[in-house]
Every structure is written in structure tokens, then in C-alpha cells.
Image (cartoon, rainbow, N blue to C red):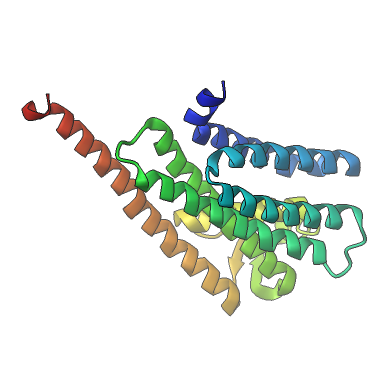
Length: 232
């Protein structure tokens, strides 16, 4: 059973990411206790999947340390009086680092392979989504430290007071930036936010041009090699 899960680890990760993305905005309608339990369930599921993705011992140790800070920041912000946003700042800092680390590990594993499987293609998609998540936490952190860094539409501004919806909206903004679709409800208006957005836009184009093209090229090379007469 474990071998089957490991063979489809990126598919399991994709499912976990989709579940987390769906639960996050819906948690606003839950009670405080249900929000905390839901957050812990999402983190536990995601951590379990990431422990499958992180194959080396040092990777798992480093991931566990970062997740411990993420959990501490999440619980501290949800449960304790977080007047200075210390819990939220801790959460976003280590969440951004954790997701960036996960992207680096996933891509490293993919490019080390001699043959490309379907699960590796899904892994590339997971890396793309995790990249958006890492930048989303960077945007949320920027908003906490410098609220005037973004111009927010009136309908959205009133909802950014809720931390869960704030994380969801900056996740949405990050995906729009990464894919190059542009801004609507949220837009950068300060040097810090401008720098983050143009870096993410460039990285998004680089990811598609290099990572996906490399995977397609490796796949075509496998097909050509398999069809060559001297390979039989």
C-alpha cells in the first residue's frame, strides 16, 4: 500500500492541495473551534503527503521544523490575543519558506530522473501551485507589515479583516500574477509589492518555458529512443 502511495505521491499532494484550497475560504462560516480543528486537519493531511515527497532524512527534519513554526503561528494567532500579529507573521514567514523548499525538492527530483512518468508531470503542476502558495504568503506578510502596499477593491477590503479570507484572496492574487492574467480586485501600489509581483510574473513565465518544455522534451526523447531500430 505504501509503495502504491509513493508511486502516486504527487497525485496525493495535488488532492491535498485542492482540499486545502476549498476548505480555507469555507472556514469563515465555521465556529472558532471548528476553524482550528479544520486548520489542523488540513495541515496534518498536507504534512503527511509532504513527508512522502521529502525522501531524504535531512529534508524531512527541516520540513518538520518549519511546520512546527507554522503550526505555532497558526495556533497563536487563532487562540491567543495576537494584537501585534506575531502569530500571523510567523505563520506567513515559515509557510513561504516551507512551500519554496517543497518546490525546490519536487523539481530537483523530477530533473534527476532519466525517465518521466505521469506522476512526475503531476508533480510539475504541484510545483506550480506551491509556487503560487509561497508568493501568496509573501504578499500576505507584506500586507500585514505595510497595509498600504496594495490597492484593494471596496468589496474585498471589508473582508480582508478575516485572516482566512485574507489568505484566500492573496492566494487568488498570487495565481493571477503567476499565470499573467492580471489584477482586478487587488493590485500593487508600493515598491515592495511591485517587486514581489514582477518577480513572480517572471518566475511564472520561466517555469512554463523551462520546466514544462524540459518535461515534454524528455518525454519525446524517450519515445524516439524507444522507436529507434537499434534500441531493440
